Amino acid sequence: MISFSRAKSRDHVHPHGRVSTSLDTSGVWVAILLALSAIPAHADSSMPKAAYADTQLPNPKQEADAHALMESVRCLVCQGQSIADSDAELAADMRAMIRRRIAAGEKPEAIRRWLIERYGDWVSYKPVLDAATAPLWIAPFLLIAVGIWLARGRFRKRRN
Image 1 (cartoon, rainbow, N blue to C red):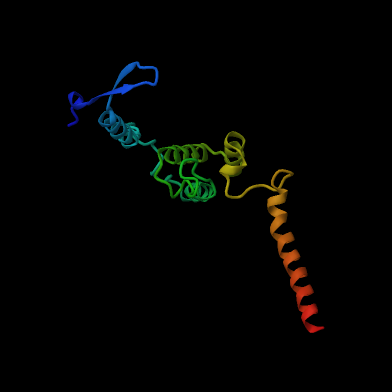
Image 2: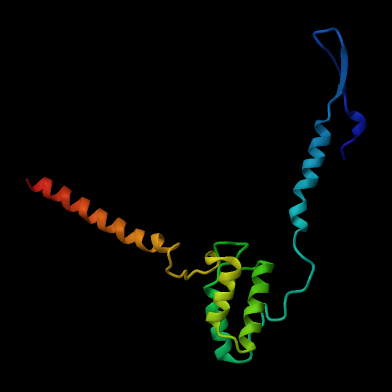
């Protein structure tokens, strides 16, 4: 345990002759940093998971539709996983919401549109082709074409 009574007093003489006293508080800062580093360990919620988060729907067709949609929706917390693969609480809530809405008869494409409207195109692993995403769809083909054109020019020069 860090004792605050061990803080050492140091006298500093300023150029104008004044004397000031400061405390060595490095131990206090270490204690504060250690306490702050423990905060993320308590970040998980104590709330129970949503009802359909990990429970499959009784109708196999509806569950297959729900699972296909969950595979194509990006986890907003993990960012590199679909909500079907993520253990994050937000992903569990999103899985439950998708299952509830499909069980209520809503079509997966309508749910996908709602998610994209709410969270943006980024939430979907299957982005739509529109003016904002067109460069992302076209760029790979342009780069391949430029590479082929450059390679063709290099091979022609070597032949001559």
